[in-house]
Length: 468
Image (cartoon, rainbow, N blue to C red; front, side):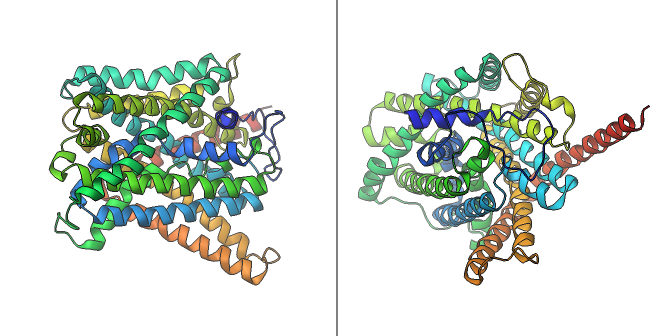
């Protein structure tokens, strides 16, 4: 419990003013995260609501989706190792944007920061779409009621904003409960559920879509990446971690492996319990799976409760993270200064409101009607692109440091670190390619808007510097 509380307490790194970017950022708080707390941070950050809907998104791809899940798991581990390696070389907060910024400068740092901010903002929209599915399942509501769906989604987006405005103590207490609750359905399905699935042995075909196997795996893999977002959370909070050069790598690897085990086994269990035709018509596959095990109709509503609590916890944590990333970037001078503004309770209100408004706009556009599952897929594919970009830029920063004169480690360590870097870079490109043309266009538009913001902010700063 204390470790979970420490994990939740990481969400407010207090960056107030521009600082030396090469200096490690260490919090002055007495409650620094150790390996258990940082590992809980990884698990709590990675496991959201997306995993509770993903089996429905993957159902059309049959057992090849499990292959994609295993490949993305290995890719996620490589990304985790990459960030753990970079945390040793550059022990500072900010993770996904800090490392490219440190190595390549402001424009690359802004690109990584903006993309990562989009990942969390658009990810919130994707999580709330999945969350609405389980709210409907919990209360037995008709999922076709668009007005009610939209109202529930707005509650899911804006209640966490209100909690974050109230203060960090409330955020921490709320996160302690949700981190514990969210793993219960996954553990149940990965143990009891997989046993029932193996006993029935009613798994789907390998390739029911009939597509080219590697293309099917690539497409499914792009969907899977969404459930691994957060493997870098411990590096983002390096300023709140005790001895980050050792704690961050260990927590990243352990946390990613725990999540991977739960994901693979629970998804495989649902595939073996629920026919593919039923999975593709629901956004709450865990509810169907538990009904198959127990034969009790209300058991689906019971497990939906856990998914709902998990979702609101993920939304709560991401809501603050989505404000902290631009806040730290603004303190480094690569985001508009407005993002550094705080309320009297230390809430970064500009980032909170801007991120919530963007997520709300995406949810309103989606309508959350019959196309809810389709929109969920589109949103998570966009986040796959916007997360893969800072991952790739971090890999390039690692490559530069490894090959730069005077920076090379021992030959054996160099070979190991280069291998991790190359795998992470190739994995990032693979995720972007597999996302499809439409999500790539959406992501490109959102990133292009960021460059407009960057250009206007640079012009404003220059005018301020030239003023007498």
